[in-house]
Image (cartoon, rainbow, N blue to C red; front, top):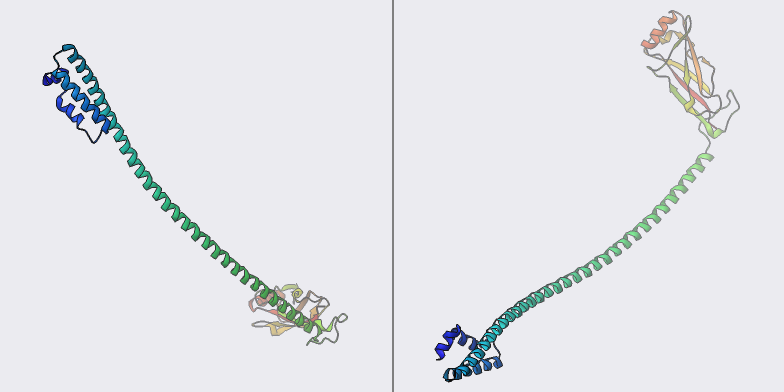
Length: 277
């Protein structure tokens, strides 16, 4: 009868026994309930009253369905618990990793603080060296200024090695007597025809810095024929910035002399002595 009852309900007896024997899933009180249901099943199978058998059968079927549903629920919850435990394990691993990273960051912060301290110490050393260097430079500059002032005083007190007895104007300070010389240049002298047989050129002496009319001595230099000239030492219109030299060519015309002056590089060499203060 038991075999007939299980076949009529559509639930295999082996599945029912599997639910009963699933000790790894159900707690003790649930297994006790399944045992009691099994006894009811057996009692219903031995009973001869059809109504009692039907009632017991319905009761057993409801209990079996509830038990199977509970089994599925417990399986689902077990899976969720396993997932939670796995997630917890992963979280613990991540926490340990984060703690290690935090320790590494702390080590880096400590190292940065040490580097900052070393950098500050280096800056202080450099600033100290710079201060000492500035002090040394200032002291050296002061010594140089004192030496320069001493040289200036010596120059002011020293008498000039050039002696000018007199000149076109009253003498200046004896310590300001100066000798200045120069040339108009072999290729840069500009000779101008004054009249037939005469040539002249103007000489700039402004670079000498004379403040009074100097005494000027001149000569004509060249590569040929300038020995035939007269007036090479004749100086005209001398001032503190310029003078003029006029020469005479007796044996040749002024036109021919002008060509010779350029060809033979005639130029005026001069020496001027005067006062600059």
